[in-house]
Image (cartoon, rainbow, N blue to C red; front, side):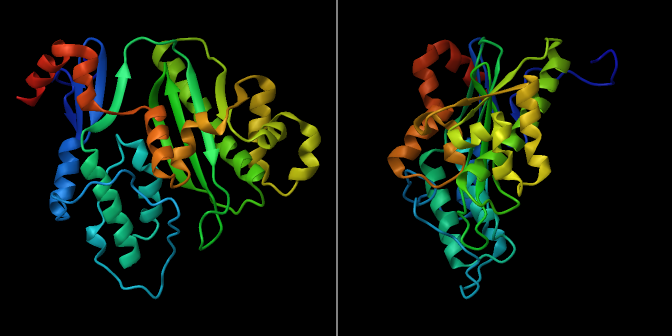
Length: 306
């Protein structure tokens, strides 16, 4: 790149836009612990009691038009290295224009969770099988204001989490099958984009991307054209995934709900379930790296901190 562009080599990346990067010969970790502490300090919650989960499982936030307004500048988030915050932050972000006390209470719950997980982040291990694997899940009619669901997506490369999203669906689905079908279609588009990016970067041959879905009816709808009569009302663009399955660029596989890693991105889970899914997804307490990789990693780590 230096032969083409006028640029300087600043050495190994250690900090970028609030993201702290620590590298060793065995793994790379990214987190936002410094930024998290800054957010808690600004919110006056540096000494708050920590929480085990970022959102209560039965919490249904709405526009709350009759609620007491609060200062919009009190909204603060960090999600670039924290997929476990994807859903909760996405929900409270819907009310940023005119937040009420009920919304601010939910934000403070997120901050208390951050307080107890400041040093959590993502770990990227060296090696792997070089394959792209996606998980896609969706909730149905969860929003009390417009009955739209939330789609969750997570993609792994060589077993490492590389991209994720939690997004409110644009249209109302008439069933959970339809919601999953629409979510899988958007995931297929993301999968093909990631596959093409890997081909451009590595020169590898394009591979079939496996997409894990936990709804058997939605999988049948993707694979079997006979079901078309039941899906005529679905927008034509959502049938794109059928073509991907037929031509072999996408392979859809059923996965149980207990192994659906995108589940944490679609709803507020009970505490025990949330902790299980957080660990399954790959969000780790980076303090544990000391035990996993010994003194060599942390000696290297201290150099960056200095």
